[in-house]
Length: 495
Image 1 (cartoon, rainbow, N blue to C red):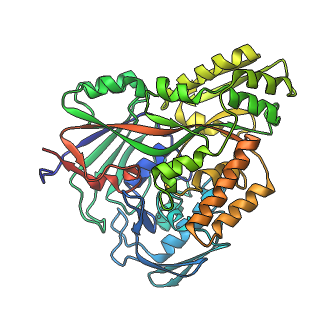
Image 2: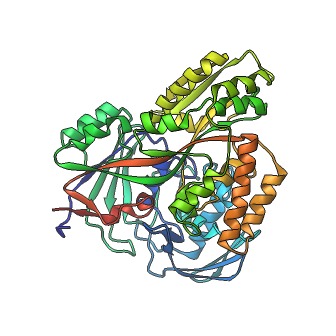
Image 3: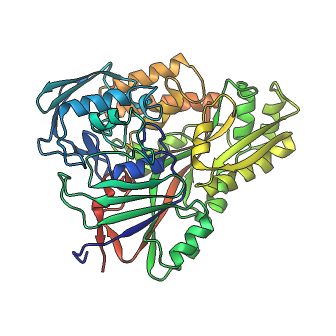
């Protein structure tokens, strides 16, 4: 760290954003952008721990009550003070399926939100929930905005006309969907003034265009370096490529309102046709791990170290790669002669497309014709659980790192598989009320086994992300959680 200020940091996103507000569009890139601008009542530090953010402190007098003390010196980027009423209002909007379809599911356990003092907000839940505190961060569902700003724009925020307003170290000054967004530092953040004066984020979905711009020196930070181009990126003389287990899960999702995916034998046939080991070794070039379960090994860190976690998760046994077995499952299904289906993947994840082509080749001899199609990130997000795409990819980056985050979304109430299993719902409820972290993990492992037996989802791999940094820019801590905190304030001018 040279200790100097940086006039401008240029960032390349591998996909486009149509809206900046995570309540409207909730892809991982939306979270990365929002985290530089908006805050929750609490934050998540680079080690995954809950830390103060807008709330300087909090108490939990019982298992369903959280009392937050909002910072008296907190200000919005327009210079106006943050009030307890703003926090109450923001959480009220976040729980609304109409106002915030992208995040309201996080708050299904939320009971009441109330102002209980001049700078105090009290939140209660319907039932105990070990993960709820992380939900009060910007990595969950709490991005606090100003009530007056929201009402001025009649709730239509995150657009090029309205932008977003928050309390973080940067404000949005320009946003052109499918093109770019510009962030400028402010002096209103309670955490101090960042070193980088401006952050310019360009949306560059085409991987070759992104690589060329970086080779020319136009990019300081590039998210999601394509795995197949890793060696080319590593050869850029004035930069470096960093890899990290990114808490991501990739799997196949089956919408069971769409035939024939309501047939368990169809789901088993597809799961048996996936060569997970070959995908990780050959297509991902080792940047990932074959997955038997939805939970990632890192999410179990509070109870088990990496080796122990992997051993436990290896005991979960979904149908493994066996083409003869796949053929047998299909012969016992409602469509023994096969069928046709479309499988879309986002243009920000070319590795998903390569894996989809591999799966399509394996399924073709069985009579299953998979038409693989690349679409823009926002279009792919809209296909998940839409009642039309029976077979979909699920590419989920856990933002909180909680072991139940992804499985609760994929298997809990109103899940995108449209699958209702009282046993699984009961196990998830028991896990939330568990007396210890170890008991909770054991219950979640039972959930995983139920998923494996019924193939509600077909886990494929746990991912790693590659990020490019120019040698003129450093980041104080690089971890799976770096970019879901106030990452702009973590940047510095490097020697």
